[in-house]
Image 1 (cartoon, rainbow, N blue to C red):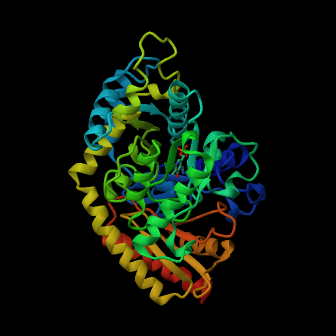
Image 2 (image 1 turned 120 degrees about the vertical axis):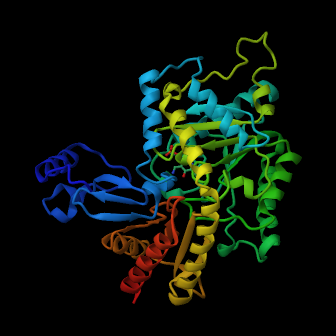
Length: 465
Ligand code: PMP
């Protein structure tokens, strides 16, 4: 840290924060006292893989800004410069007008997404998902008299924080107190083989998990189902990598019943798993792809709902009908900083071959996690794709009884005390908040990964002996 903030300034910031900021995802009671240890944590500065807090303490960031976002790491001046230049030229214009960075980023993005063709700009992952839900509903009204309107979502998946997204939310602890929910969303089972629901393995397990979706479709009536919305690799629900065989069968089922496939790439999108998008590992051809976090690595707020031409065509097939366009707008979809930052973000990933690094470092880290599993009996399973990894902690390997959430959080806290930030599934799924999560920036080196592993090793030893 360059020491620009003097002690007085810092204590003023901390007091202002304590008095007025309502932080996300946290119980505020401990911060109302005077114990300095309970100060809110304020992140002041970042460079590469590292951030510094208000006390000047350095942390290795193993979660890319807390929630799998800062894919290209901190301190990227070329992104900041591109945003600055664009803001001076034109910060914003919305409505039905386009912008230069909006057009150029769309072209660049679509060049990485064969089969897709249109980019609809929004400002958060939740909103991008809402756009897809609305498109599905409008198609149901236009084509099927409103009948084919139901949207299937999966147990343990998460699609955002709005009421409609929570209606499509498979994490019951997040949803517990915000009902009543929007009708027309129907749950299908998850596909985590470690927590097997069918007595099968590998590809057979994958096919069985996909067939379970078909059972729900048949029970509901295929002519009532408009879309299936899935994360390619489930993130906050426990880093669930789908078994072989799962995705091809899912695609087959969607085609069989004329169900649109919506893939939520808010976490996996733009490199996190070692391909531009998570679905590209599995040869799937989606109708909707939504994305947010990695699109501009958090340097500007930008999200989008990308569709193929088949979906787009349905909104321009009858020019005599004044209701026949997508009757939707997003105010901040007109901010130009987002696509300007996103263009530079993609250029960095290409020029530095960060997809290649993600594959290599992801494989290395998975091996290191497997070695940790050999050492610590509390690790029941390790899994991951690219730099998107998890270690599920259990109280008993034989019964797979999930580890108590408080002890999982104690491991996270111990790493934090060591100056290493890792994550964990957190108050999401009753009984299953037991997976340590890692999502370092795509620039991670072997040294960074060794550091994350060593901190976890020490924390596991301290917490569990
Ligand atoms: N989908 C997934 C898979 C997510 O993980 C998230 C956010 N964690 C969202 C959607 C919602 O994105 P946002 O917070 O930008 O609304």
